[in-house]
Length: 495
Image (tube, rainbow, N blue to C red; front, side, top):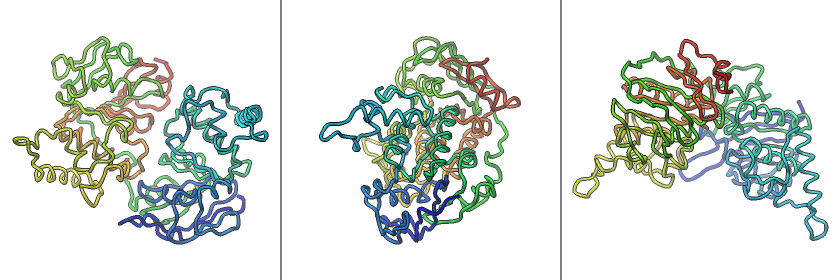
């Protein structure tokens, strides 16, 4: 391992009412891939913002390449070779790839932009990564994986020496993730240091040399990956042991069919048929583009059904709008909770009770006392961590945001839950809580359809798994036959 090029010394950062970072100290070596892990709210993002100049630390200092700084400006961080690739891309879809790479850093011949030089340098980066991307193509034509690579190419073009990757594989398939890992290894061989932020443990063990663990804004420990295991890291992250990554659960699925889908077409889905039983946790597996999210949109009446039928509790369902589905006890926890699941600028209280607000109204007046008691009860039941019901949803961790959405739908008396990527971007401890919540809903007789890109997750929580590929249903797998390789084969189009 190379020499130390970055050291955090006693970094502290306070926000109103919150000590986000408290005396955090550790170092990063040249050519090292360092995992920075911890629960949502542990301080990872705040610390990286201190490094990139977006936040100014209240205490401590940062030593970069032998020079000590009490704080960095974004300009200084960029000039020192620090680049960050966020989970949400910082790119302009309508511009060509090459312009996205060099925007703000255009090579010029005098006062004229040197287009040939831009193309040459962009192509050289892609050739080095062995990735086929046309630098002249419009960015919006690329897949999420290729956009991720463009972001990294942009960082490399700036001669970055420290590359920060924040949940980089969230939008990627397994094959696309392999491309990313190849790029990281090549960057590492060239002496670039990588800070890798991810909640996916298998990735951390695969690509990282060392892990630094934060909890509640404090440095807890660091471990060499070859000397630790998943259980130890999880205990360090959440401060307690988890007996099993996926909680033990005995299926309570009954014979009673609550939803039957017959030869359903629409929103890119073709000839879909399946049954959902009372108390069943039904997983839907597939690769990116398989049509899983599209299917849930049709079931929730958020996308039109072309033909086929849905039968709910023995009766044909002819709903046209989401409100029709909600009235029939169907709820959707969407893949993008921040856009479609929550009103981020509104309070926890409003987000929990808005979908069922009519039941709190008497003669046109909201019964605020009952509304508040109901919301407080959900917070207690689900362990939602917040000082006040008036706290805006945007300030909650990912896990707590998911719990608020689930509470919202429980308040409408839903008994069929459609969960689309329920643990995406959520830390290990919160994932475990969401799994337990899913199990408790099933135990109460609720029926759940769970979409996940992680086959291991579905194997860990589902009673049965349906597999989709390119809008079609490839088959059903019973729990006794769960196998990651089988699911992957089916998701690749093999029946």
